[in-house]
Amino acid sequence: MPYEAVGTLYKVFPEQQITERFRKREFILSVQDGMYVQLVKFTLKQDRCNLIEGYKLGAELKVTFSISGREVQGKDGEPLYFTSLDAWKIEPLKDAPMGQDLSSPFDTSDDVPF
Image 1 (tube, rainbow, N blue to C red):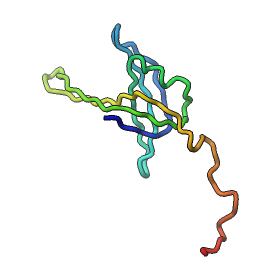
Image 2 (image 1 turned 90 degrees about the horizontal axis):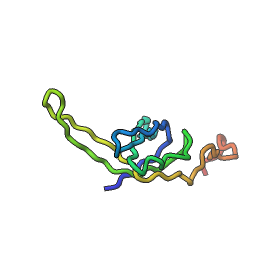
Image 3 (image 1 turned 90 degrees about the vertical axis):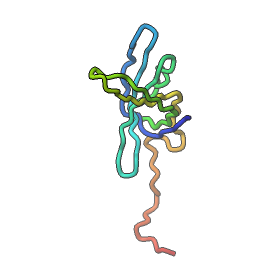
Image 4 (image 1 turned 30 degrees about the horizontal axis):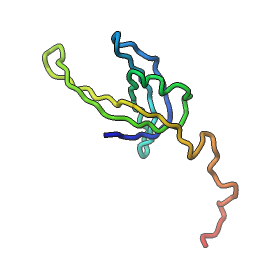
């Protein structure tokens, strides 16, 4: 099931070669959640590691991702649970380019309400 998140590119980590056949790259998206900002980590795997190339920090992006979870045995024999957000599509937002002033050019502080 695909999910989407919209936010600002906050940080990009270097690509990691985990095994001979597996590589990944992580990045952080700053997402506004009501009054609070959430820093959400996404993972790009294998041939998708380059999807984040070309985007600068501060870019407004829409990320399409899926959620995966797994259980592994901890050293003490107890199960551990991991969740990852696997990004598979990244798009720039075009509706409001960064730095665009969306305020009114007119002084509206003394407007009458009718």
